[in-house]
Amino acid sequence: MKKWFSLGRSFLFRHPEWTSEIPRQDIPIMIFTLSQWDALQRQEFHIGAAPIGPKELGRNSNYVFALPARYNFAFPKGYEEVEDILEDNPLIPIMD
Image (cartoon, rainbow, N blue to C red; front, side, top):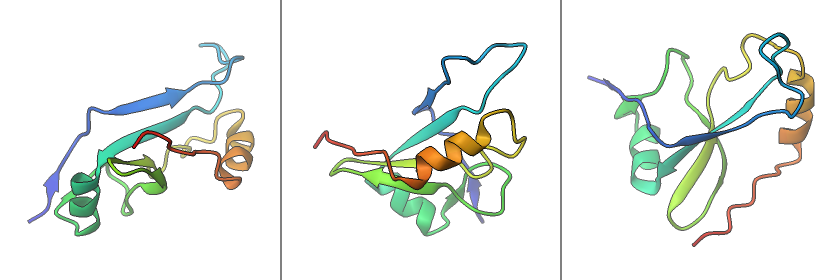
């Protein structure tokens, strides 16, 4: 039986022109320990309602940084810009 799990560690990049009247696409980054990420890959637990899990963006010797599934499901203004940014693999974890 799979467990549902909510991580408390994450951060959010917000566009400087974001407003409550005109929200823009955020870039949410989830942070997993290596053991949490391995357990997630073994499907010992699941995060969210999407049928797929988070996408790894990068890692160091302690953590895996991932993009949540369906982070842009609502297609707010700027989602294309975020896709372009993520296409270039901009995350470079340096802490070891």
